[in-house]
Image (cartoon, rainbow, N blue to C red; front, side, top):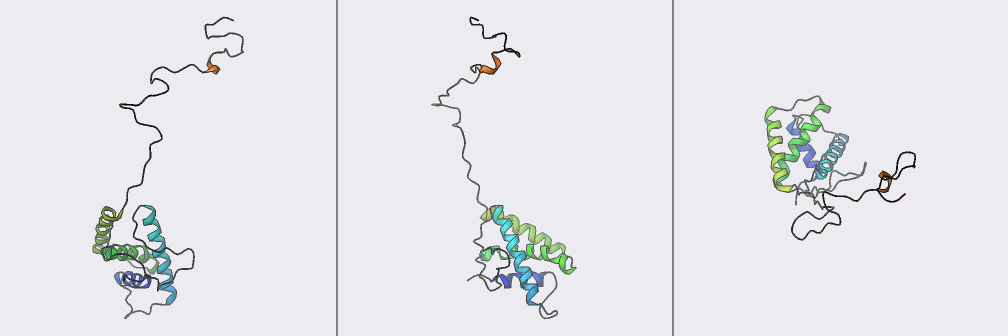
Amino acid sequence: MSYTKGELVQAALEEIGIASYEFDISPEQIDSGVSRLDAMMGSWTGLGINLSFPIAKGKNSNSDTDSNIPDSAYEAVVTNLAIRMAPSYGKAVSLDTRDIARRSYNILLKIFAQPREVQLNKMPLGAGYKASETRFTYSPKEEYLKDVDDTVDLSGGPV
């Protein structure tokens, strides 16, 4: 079992210095953090980091939902979420936290990022490739065979 979304938000709040034993964390703050977590994980999914995180649409997110992230991604998620949440609380994130966030995010990119599938729209040139036209000569197009005022035929054939 992995961490819940609420646990990830609480860990991020602790990372920026808002611990539950010093400050009362309201359920609205947790819900706000969960929506930021969903947005962050949605952007990571768009970049190719697929952690099987259940992204909720709109305000349907629940802090008790299991996040499905592996233990190897915990540090990257918490520190990067802390960096995103800190300005709304008027806090500055330490340089150590920023360094850990950057390094752990780069590790996630190496491990979990999947390359996008690319399909060629044409067959590559090489052995066995038979083009319908040669590469250097093209058949003339009809629009270039007439003069501007349609009086002279430049094709060289009989008029």
